[in-house]
Image (cartoon, rainbow, N blue to C red; front, side, top):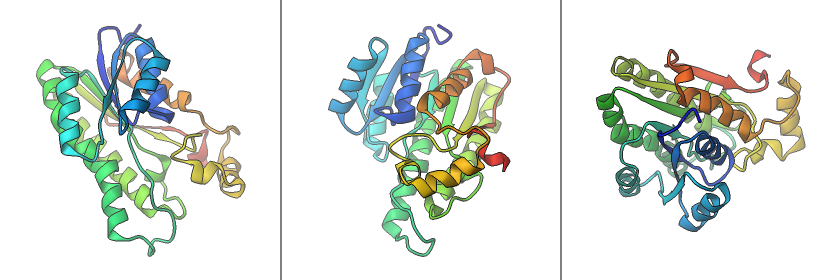
Length: 243
């Protein structure tokens, strides 16, 4: 129960990594506000995960939805910015402005808005943890993924900037950079045998990553066990970046 009496917000928590993080936080004593676009989907997740989960429909690309989520959650101790999209794969020259704007809106601007709304309260109370789910794509460009790599690289720099400013006020900010994790968001890579093989050939740990393996790191970063850790990007990739 290392998160007993803590309040957390986890975006993109209806499935995959976000759902695993929410379940782990609730198991460790936190009240977890989970958000996604569809209330009925979130309600089903809350029923599955049990006590401690509060489902709130929120499209992170909409200011009014974020404002409603923040008002409902109140004083938040832990913010996990997990919501992301990857709507565009292909040649660097093949994307259009609509795709570019959508990727920035969801992957970056939502983080900016949520931190802007919740960090002042954390700083005033003198404690808090912000966890941004980045990607190894933000550390090393992936083929056919210019926009995703670009937004995740920017998210890592945002994390460092938040850590620098909020640290003296007792608030930590860190990022997690997953490698290939078996989620719907990344199925473009792991469902295709040749693309999955590209990752497996370069990993020293030879299994496909699972959401719970990211959730365990998020729990550490959210808790006082990481009280001396800020501004870092924790790479959880089976050793992919070693090669």
